[in-house]
Length: 231
Ligand code: MN
Image (tube, rainbow, N blue to C red; front, side, top):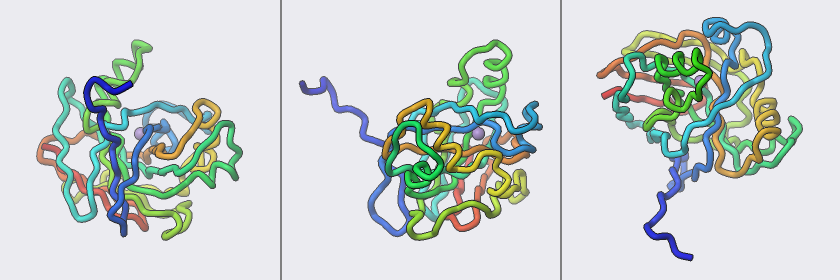
């Protein structure tokens, strides 16, 4: 049958060195994957990773050399930044082992898991879903993807966020509690993963609020930085 109106096209993430885009299927996110951030959010130790999701059309794609414009979202007075390494999958499956999980990785980008922290905190305290805190329009700025076939596997390297030139978050990918392969393997026990899925892999310590006119520069060693202004 024909659709009664044209469906929304897939979100395409720009790819470094290509005029083609990466078509996004789902956006998964990992909570508390760096020990210091887990502690600042009230957890301790190596708890099993937990997951939430954002709509694919909540992505705010930013090409290399551009500054993304992120509207300050409604219904919050506490918009927080969380810089994260984003992993893009070109294949998937269910119940993957770590070796099979590794084969699913197509490439990497720098992302921001923007969070209406006041709404998330309210949802946590009331045992309600996180969607209003995490899944709003523009909640997932992402820079251009780099193919793993070009840059190799990312397992360590600086991850850093500056706001108006001051360092807010600084860590190392090696400090992840659960590695990229372990995250994908665990995630695949909950959901069948497929080509086009993105995984936001958690944030180091230092999350804090931003306001209108703030300029965020997010970087991961080896990747094109992501620059976003809150408007
Ligand atoms: Mn996050």
